[in-house]
Length: 383
Image (cartoon, rainbow, N blue to C red; front, side, top):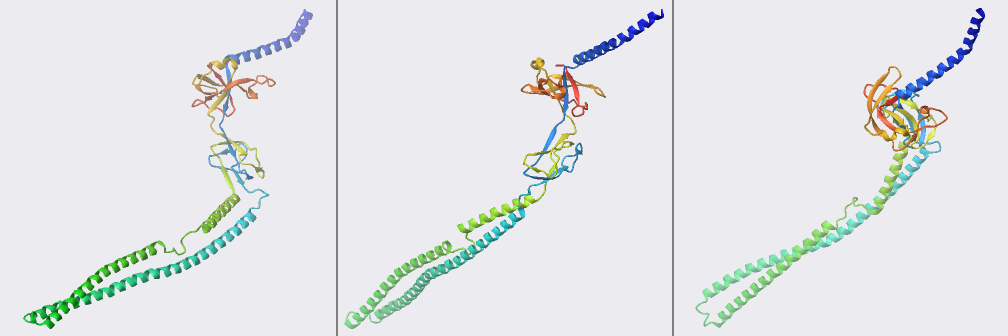
C-alpha cells in the first residue's frame, strides 16, 4: 500500500509540470482570444508636437530648458546669434561706416557745386531780368512823356479855340473886307487843325506804347515765374544717385547690427519639452530643429486599421474607445480623418517585432472627460 502511494506520488510529480505548462498555454491562448474578441484595433494617444526651429543661419547660444520641462506659451526656450565665428562683423561695420563717410562727402561736394551753380544761374537770371525791367521802365517813361505832351497840346488847343472865337467875334465886321484879318484868322484855324491832328496821332501812339508796356510786363512776369532758379532745393540726378547709395549702405549697416543682437525663440504653446536634438554652441542652419514641444493636452488618437476592414472605414463613423489602464474608461467618439494610403504601423504595435505590419491610419478625437497620457495605448472597436 505504501509502495502504491509512493508510485502515485512520483507519477503526479512527473505529470505536474506538464499540467502547469498546458495550463499556462491555455491561459495565454485565452488572454489573446479575450483581447482579440474585445478589441479590433489598438490606437495610440497622439500628442500634438510643435517644432521650434532656427529662423536663420547662426550659432545656438543657450537652451534654458531641460528635457521633459513644462513650458508655457511664449516662454523663452532658445537663444541664438546670427554671427558665426568666421564672420568679422565689426570690421564690416567699420568698412560700411567709411563708405558712408565717403558718400556723405561726395554728397556735400555735389551740394556745394550745385549751390554755386544756382548762384551763377541767379546772376544770369538777374542780368536777364534787368533787361526785361529796363523794357518796362522805358515803356512807362515813353508813356509818361507822351501823356505830358498830349495834355500840353490839349491845353494849347483849347487856348487856340478860345482865341479863334474871340478873334472872330472882335473882327466880325471887317473880316469880309480886311484881307489881312481874314488871313490871320485862317492861319489861326490852320494851326488849330494841325495841333488837333498831332494830338490824335499822339493818342494812337500812346495806345501803341501801352500795348508795348503790357507786353514787356507780361514777358517780365513769365521770366520771373518760370525761369527763377530754386536756390539749394532743386534735386539733380547726381545727388539722387548718391542718396540711393547712402540708403543702401544704411540698410546694410542695420542688417549687420541686427545680426549682432541675440535672437530669442519662444514656446509656441503650453506643453512639455519632448526632444532637444541641438546643443548650445552648435552652428545651425536656417530651419534646423532645435527642440520639440509636446502639447500638454492630448487631443487625438491615431489608429491603424487592418486591410481586411479598410472598406468599412468612413469619416464620421462612431467607434468605442476603451482605456484598459487604471482608471479604466469607456467612451464613444468618431473617426475624423482617414489616411489616403496604407502605411507601416509603429513598431510597438507589431504582433511580432521581426515582422512589420501595415494598416490604414485614421484619427479619432479624444472624447471630453477621457484623460489619456501621451503615447498611451487604447482599444478601438465598433467598426
